[in-house]
Length: 425
Image (tube, rainbow, N blue to C red; front, top):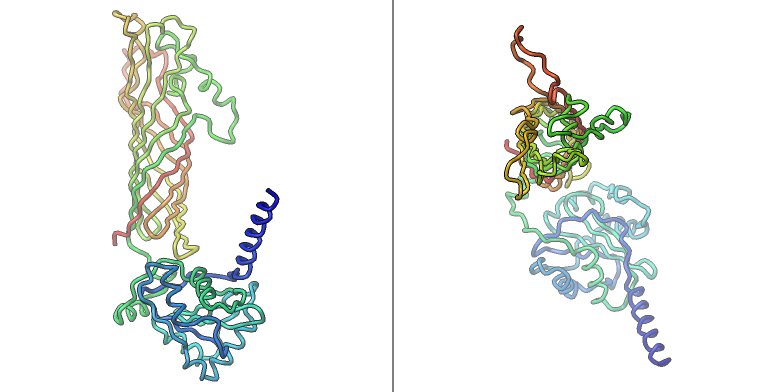
């Protein structure tokens, strides 16, 4: 048994030693474009470079099945160029984890011109520095490294090539551009300074939660709503708010579509659905005949959107917004008696009835988080209201009403949705 433990410990030690021997450290990585069937130019000031071009191409194919048939060769032209040699030696001496890429930029105009002339070729800089091999990757888009790191030096060039390929060339390979496509890309404005699209649109599907109590407001403002119970199918202490009859805290589903002009002003059509239980008094024996009593809430609204767009990175847009709008709410009754009840009570027949529609306002704010130009996450919160239509002609012969059902109903909501965004024009 002790011998078995010794062998197991030896194997773990060898694995750890091997991992440490060929361990690598990435200083920074801005994920340069990996071209399919790429041309890899290996640039080194060493007489015997740490990797072999042919073996490195095989390493690329082993570690990235989508890279196609890469071509790898030594960048001999730069090895014989005095400007390139000076920059290579300086770069090898100054590569350090604490330095930002811009600090390593080539300053000489002739060296900058060499990088700009690369087209879609990739320059792989490898140079020994003590017991380490410094690695840096350049392309035509900048005069500074797009990625850099170091790997422990090993005499095994195949393993060195595998380590570099696995660390820096594991992304998705893209089709190489034609000359016309490359020319067009060079003349396009920077993504941060492109013209603002005229109209952007989105559609979203999500869910949320609403409640009568607005956060950071006193509890006693809502105690009559929260604690209210309906007796005899129609009696409550206060009938001004619908939340005195219905559960005031429930999840809801939502669907919405909208758009903005010039990333500033827009409109949005929304639909909400929620299901509310009636707040029946369990001590009231009249409800013994009742199986369930619910109301489905359907809301259709239109919002005016005021937004601003931010682009912290090339792959994400953040668009905070505020909205103000109006809505119409429809409550559809779902009530059933128990199977053994043949004739309902008089109270059941004379139960409370809601208006056909309630109208109200919406006010709130939120933000779209848009990833890869199309896929979004929308977050929002706000306050919504709904009330009874009071615009009726007064009559001197009309009898005074005991109460106004749903005269003023207010709630707070918060929601999130998955969205799809497009630029229409």
